[in-house]
Image (cartoon, rainbow, N blue to C red):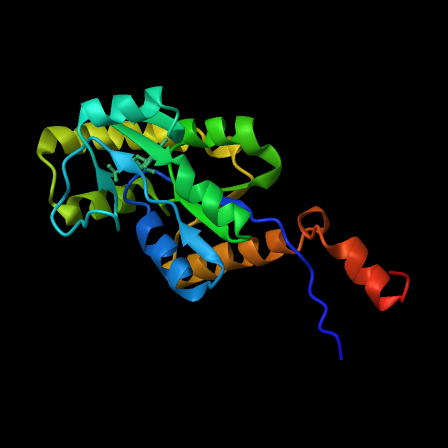
Length: 212
Ligand code: 5GP
């Protein structure tokens, strides 16, 4: 028997949220559960937080290196968030998509808008909201890694970030992390099944109908 399978175009799954909404937990769980999904690891000029690892959480680079990468067009999108620069290395993403794998991004609304402009058809964007502002503050305090001043600015920034939810395809309110993980997985499953992403459908169906 000849095995027929449908060729699929890779998609770009963007997760955005204010920090503290649980996005990292959600993205890690999805990455563990999904085979054909790679994480895009960003570059940043900020210092590593305790527990963060080079090449897993970020590539930590100097401002000079960051500006060099921007000038050399090595970043797919880039933005200043808080006081630091962030960007998505282009080569890894293009390699994964070309290999038919999907790529997940943890980037802010500025980066999402840039990706939307350059790759609208391949982009699926999800905004994750915290269940309440009180809970967001509690989670940010729980980290206890930032000074009071940074905390205050993060909360102000969170409210700013949250105003961008209407620019996203999907919105998940992270009331329960396991439920949110399942919800994002469902989004991924449904988006993978979109007819226009299954580029091999014509030959697949023709093959079954013996018209090849
Ligand atoms: P943090 O410093 O807390 O890890 O991240 C701060 C913000 O920067 C988060 O909203 C995160 O999504 C965003 N961010 C991380 N990497 C990138 C990136 O490569 N591009 C853009 N535009 N934002 C990013």
